Length: 634
Image (tube, rainbow, N blue to C red; front, side):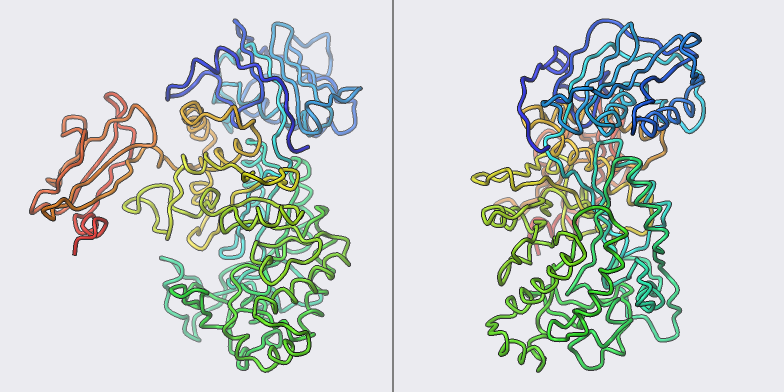
């Protein structure tokens, strides 16, 4: 189900808690309807979970049992007469129209806990909400001795969109099978149901294709480099190409099963015809360009000139649309990929395909004459339409990034819109299915705060902007908007801890935009809930970005060419303290109340935020030279 309307009962709790700070009931994403009543229920030492005789309920019950027995000292019993406390998982005998497939009702009362739903997936999401009602210690990996109380509450909930995704780029840097499982575990806490795996790119081919062994023998490995990806010196011939890895087909089956047990589908992406240097390095005959046999899998060196539009390739990282071997290659790849993934779509990329090497190719010129193609965009469209037929021959639906609109869209293609909302809106108006994933709201590789403290990336996406994500553009029939997703590209993400840091809390914001009713979204209420989940993540040992506590800096020149600094915060109720004297400010230092002029000989600005008398933000240091640049002072 995508969009349902129902009477929304906003409880007194929801209306009275718009201030920031940790909250008593803090569910993310915000449910459709919450009614809190007086009283709390205390979990006893003996619990029975009922309803497990129904098909599909056992995995949900087992998931709940594991969480309860890991953090609490309760005993899960099979005998009702020995259980003091009952958790009932109830599949409705007559489906309820309002809650649909993924919705649920949850009640905590003196009688116990009841979760009811039409399908097991609804029970699973009810369990996720139930766990968020427990104290934060439920996230502990060891038993915590405490009294486990829950508020009395009634919740009715169901998703706004059917497609609620996160994209995990495992091509730029390889992440192990266990890493992917961990990412899935964190996703489902927030009711995401789609993991988009970006499996191939210039830096690595990550999925075994048995009929094309060089894809992983050669294409899965490069030279290990650290620093700022995209600025590395080209590897020398003697540097070992042993950094990377790939998933065997058995690994993929294991991941698919793991995801299915948690009601997550996996969407594979094979990114072509651009972003294909790993494939070309393994099989140079797939290129239009002479000399491709000398190409290597990228290790982070410069291969594109992004200063021009369209960007110009310095190394031809494309497959050749004029080469029949390319279509034979893709048929082999998809013959093996399609059966591994039950999800109906296969994503075939199509983004950022440079055309400058195609323009020089005699084979491409001949193809254009033969097929009456007028532009390079039409050449790519020719490729995409042939590729769609291959995908459909494997029983799958074709999806690509919004560049596939250029030159003419394949007849039944679905579009994932990343360059803003326009591509998705255009595709929806052409009656194509659309998933919204715009850079300005949903790119998790972007900086979350100021470049002075965050790992440097070319753009910034703060939590408040991610929370403003609205997947349905004006004047578009929403039946074509399947939902949305956030994308974690990993050029600058080298390990799992940093992947967590980049995903959360912006993943919270995206989940709420995709699950919760639009009318229930409220930034001030949301950030209060985020802080509660920060505490839960500390217990769970999941890394998150505290950037929401850090100031936003801008600078400008005054009429007399002095530089003034403006500071603000995303969250209400924070105070900013600063110094230019190289010492470390606290709440005894000047408090920011209006734009600050940089003293004539100052070297750096140091800033920290407080809530009341407690520091809450990170100490940030910005050289005055950087502030001058921001103000445009030479």
